[in-house]
Each structure stands twice: as C-alpha cells, then as structure tokens.
Image (cartoon, rainbow, N blue to C red; front, side, top):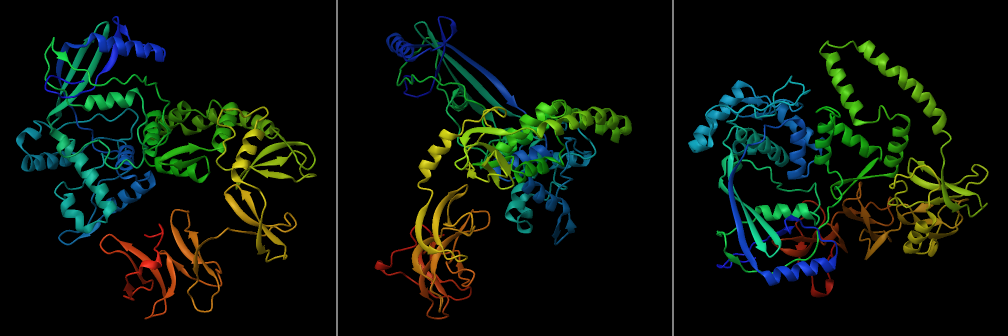
Length: 594
C-alpha cells in the first residue's frame, strides 16, 4: 500500500462481510483480489496505544544457556564450562585472584541487597536519570525453584566488560558481557513503544496493518533479547507467524480516517500454519524447565547424554531424532507409561526436594515407587524379548523374511534364519524406519531401499588395486557411510580400505612414491592433506601442497591465501619465511585454500 506521500506499508486481509476471512482455493483468492482492486482502499479506523516492556530478570542457569545458544551458538555444556571459569575467577593486578560472577547453577532470580545497591549506583552515575528506578525491581522466583543461590550476576558491577577484556579469552568475555549487561538492564527503566493499528476498507473486505515505534529505549539501550548470532536456529519458514512479526516491526505512516490509500501490489498466496520446528538446544532447555524435568545442574548433562547415546543428532542447529529414539520412546511408554512421562519426572523432582527439606520420608517414597516398578519391569523383560521388526524384504540367500536389527554401529537387515543363515543388508544411516510411529507390524522398506541403492550407483565397482591380505582384486562397495573399498573375496576376506581423494600432486617428500590425498580430521569437520602411503609416510598439512619442496629448508611448499596478500606459495615449516607469488600457469589451490 501507499499513502498520498508514497510511504509504502503492508496490510493483511482479516475480515470479509464482518467475519474472519477464509480463502478456500485459488479461484476464491482471485475473486477477492479483483473485488479489492475494484473497490479501492479507504482508512476506516486508526488506533494508537502505548506499551511498555519490562526488562527480563537476571540470568538463572536455564536462561543463560538459552541466551548463549541463541546469540553465540554455544552448547549448554560449553556455556557452563565458561561460566565455571568465570566463577572460579581470574588474576587481576590490583585485586589478586577474584571470582567474576556469582554461582552459575541456580534457578532463583533473587538478587542480594548488595547487588541491587551496586546496580542502582552504577546506573545513576552512567545513565540519564530517566533510565533509573525509584526503588529496586524485584522478580518473582517460580514455584518449586531452589532458592539456595541468588541469580547469576557479576560479583562487582564496577568490573565492566571493558575493564575485564584484557584478562579474559574471547568466549569468556562474550559470556561475561552477556551476564553483566542483563543484570544491569534488569534494574533499568522499561522501554516504551507506540503501537499503531490501521483498518482499511475495500468494499466488503477489511484489511489491517500493525506497526510499532519505540519512543524510549530504556533498558534496551544496554541489553536486548533479540538474537545477535542465532547459529542455533535455521532461517524462518514462510507462514502467518513470520508475516505477523514482520508487519508488527514496520513503521506506519500518519493517516486519517477516510483517507484513500493507493494499492501497489496484492499477494494472493494463502499462508498455512506451519508444523512446530525441531528443537534447538535453547528451545529444549526452555521446555525442560517448563515441564519441570531436571535441574539447573543437569540440563547440560541431559542434552549431552541423548547425543552420545545416539538418540538425536544435531543437524543445522536442530535436534533430529534417530530410529533408536522413536523405538525407545514407543516401547518404554507402552511398558512404563506411568513413569516415562514429564508429569512423573516433575513430581519426582518435587518429592526429592521435599525429602531434602525433611518434609517427606525417603524410605516410604522409594517403597511407593519400587513395588509397581518391579512388576512392570518383570513383565517388560518377558515381552520385549519376543519383539522382532519384520520387513517386506526377503533374504537373497534362503528366501526367509529379513528383520531389522539395531547394533552399536547402526541398523541393518538380518535374515530371520540367523544363525543358520548369516545374510545381511545395509540400511543407510539417514533412512528413518520408525518415524511414523509404526513399531509393531511389518515394515515396508524394500521400495525405499531399492531407490536409495539405485541412486548410490552399482554396489560392486572393479578397481586396479589388490588386497594386501589375500591378493584378490579390490572393489568399491556402498556402505552406511558412503562408498569404500573392500576385498572381492568378502566374506572370506574382510579387508576394507577408505577411498582416497587424490588432488593430482605427487608426495613431495624424498624417497616417497605416494600421492597427496584429501583427509578428514577427527569429527569430520575440517579437511587436511596427507600422503596415500600413510603411515609409512607421515606428510600432513592443513594447506594444499604444491608438490614441491622449499629451496631453503626442503619442507613441502603449500598454497596459502590471506585477505591482505591474496593467494601465494609458502613453506609449510614453522619458522621458515620462504614465500613466492605463483606463476600464471601454476593454477591455484582450487577451492581448498584456507
């Protein structure tokens, strides 16, 4: 939309004939577009109201982990490790060894009188009087929280992040700044906004625009809950919620009732409600806290455990459940439904708190739990042993039904006639079997497996290499983790070898006839270069070798790129300063540069 002074803004269709607009199909959408274009737009109503935003309380363990994940991409374990070092303290020239923050495992938002007094004094000296408060702001600690420790705050407000910068590492300074700013902001004035809503009429249709303008920044001048570096979340998905947020942030023009508005463009697309996104680490911590699962000291351990045991994998900052997760959830809930639920966990946490406070007898609590649990456990042990996951796949050796088995290294198909028949078939790691919730009954896998197999290419590809163990030809096979080399005499000979990606450069070390190959560091996150003859030849370098030796020290020369100098060739040996500009016909690092 445009006003007379051509200030564009966005509106949404909200009502038709006085009722909520429902667009059933494309034909209806086209009809509405035509009616709006014909009728034109007129301002029916303008509503202005003021709104204030109160600062959030100082951090507790869960909110610190959430904010650090949202703003810096820190895992909860990493956040707690950094916070531990800040709590233990650093050596300061004027004060000696000093702890910089209060205890970091707490779920109380209480602030000590000394902390409140320091914050008040700092704000009075550092900000205009409007940013301060007449009396300290108190926050209410949630019911059931342990109040042994106050909220997370700097031990002295006068140790500002600027003063501490030279004493802290980069990530320590990030977290300390976050804690310091949030604590000070919690005792500052509210931010103030003007919220404007404009209703537009177009015949029988009503459209609406909303916008917010800040009139006083208050505490947001120091701390904002907006995400700085949201490495923890993917890009927003299209949908009504995203549009609403964008429109609420737009700046609306000054208009008056009855004013005509120029239509610039209509988007006829209907935005449907999106399914809830997968959990990020910060979202999961927030949910654990809301459901009463765990305690501040256990959030990081819970998240680490479900990853280590293979129940979830982090993909693009979101947790993706595995087959083991679907299977464990379905089976445990069916056999231990009274235990495997958030309400039981939260109630047990509360009961244990009462035991700690002396309000409940621990022997009686355990006996009430243990009796029914033992009965369920014995029943489950008998029934779970009989569960098999049959598929629509048949054994290529004996024709029996293939069943799914879950091992330490992943899932695979096994002949139901084992141990008489030991035939197996790989199941790709990324293929989820139980995501639909189907755990019992025959799994329909054959069509999907055949499709994935066709996409991967032929299962056996001849090579010119020979097995080092038995002398048979080596072939390329498809496995759970991609293609690899294996002996053609398998299963009699089980020799395997990684497929090495050569870069077309001979190993430069004297006496070695190997080739330079691309390798992956532990964890698979970073590429480095080594010799195909490893471990006989120990050539390793992060930068791509040129295939030449340094004329000064005889170490391998490598490609190197910097913003200041561009691409050049240098010696890989630390302390050797040899470098040169490459000739035009020497090519370059080819995308492998640092």
